[in-house]
Image (cartoon, rainbow, N blue to C red; front, side):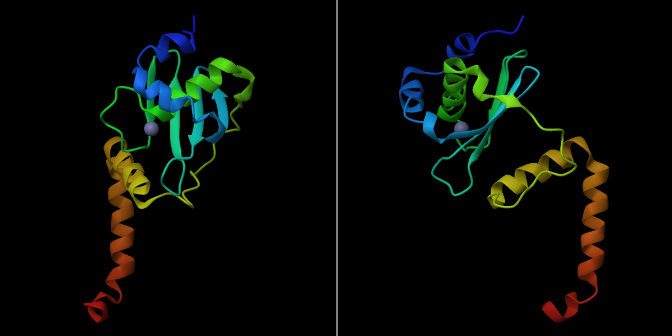
Length: 143
Ligand SMILES: [Zn+2]
């Protein structure tokens, strides 16, 4: 059985919940894929934070830098939107071959690359080699 949003919301502190209550309007791009909810929440940075919540595994993640709270206000706001109107989360489109990184903050791209390195080190190594070869052509001139 899929746990309710309320069950997960119990992990948010009262302060985080208060802040999240002001956020529903900036929660967008809500999709659902099985037990996984995804949304983008506009924060203080130009690029929105990416939130993912796995209702089945009771896990969540957000690309914001908040490491202080067990659950950040973006995840909390996403769950509040889901709780109020589950239909907001439409079925996710078929997986794209590549994420669209346009508009991502550099730190987010770095985070993605770190993930690739963690899970597919060979891919990251091959990729780094290609980049090195490309730059090897004229790096003398740049230095
Ligand atoms: Zn967050």
